[in-house]
Length: 512
Image (tube, rainbow, N blue to C red; front, side, top):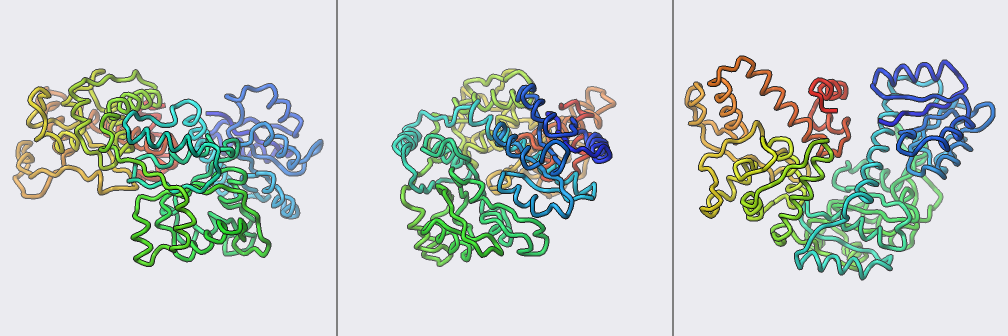
């Protein structure tokens, strides 16, 4: 992990932050003045540069605000935290105009400082992943006629700034289309900012979109730029627009109409030079009829509509996508890429994938972790795939009548849990491991766990608990990290465990 750079002429401040971050397993590098930082930036390769920069605002030999400006010229995506005494608050607020991530008032509470630094690290990692996905991986894959239509539409829109509405089922890749539209537009050199309007509580969404002034509400200790300001000169992607609260729809319509908005608690209009791309999996015409979506906003958004096909409408793309995702999963986990047999590919191509491309990506990551050999066979596929298509499998595929499931099934994406509900079997199989017969349903992964435990016990093993617990925890953590694109704190939150717990487990299980 790249270090956190700390800039302060006060040795005690540097010492306290260094020790606190070391306890959090975060490497640091300290400087006493801005000149040292600028020199180090010029001499250090970008791959070894700072993860975030924490800088005092007043130092001998230079200002933190001047340093912020120069650092942003070289590393525009680097989160910068400005430390300031209370008397410097006005200067710190003005630093936001220069792109500061947040300010840290002195004297600061150490737990709050660490929380802020962790948030900045997450933001930095999110930017790195987004940038890597744009530069290292193909934007979109697809040879099916339906996808070729989408590619042609993106090409036609490449020189336009027109508003676009992308429709399609959850997991079909709407954000990838939005990123492609941005990259190939005249605004491609500007920022691409995405926000899922369904994932943010109604009370916070207005502030997220438009920002807020200091004191606008309880807890608003500083002025904060919203997503519209962050996307200045670029593209703002509004995902799941159909779930936007009705009163906020009015504010969005005003921005689209005259290009101005007000921060929460603000009195001065802010001009928005932003292209808006919206997406939804819902039928907006029906939402308009039901009175939960403004008709005038719908017409503002529906200038150009792109429909993204579901994966079951482009089955010929499944083999190519599967091989690509297996390569990506292996690269993320630092292992040798696995190959997949033609029979297993044919079976995957026959699966409907209610979670679309996102579900296929998760299946490939699950196979990378759980398939026992380098060649993935039919019997290695997840239980939900085998159960769903087993009855229709041609004889030559040789699907086992009672496939043995690995320790656990692929996890549900949070956006569409119903699409990943586990296959339920009746419980007589429970009796086969010595438990009393019961009519309670048992899921496929539990049956697989029982079968694996029985196999190890019959082999005379005396470490069954440790072996299966280690495999379970390994698969669970790796799958969560894949779901959050490597962001540990978010993975820990989704798993319901603490930040320190997931860090300790990663070390114990040798998952670094």
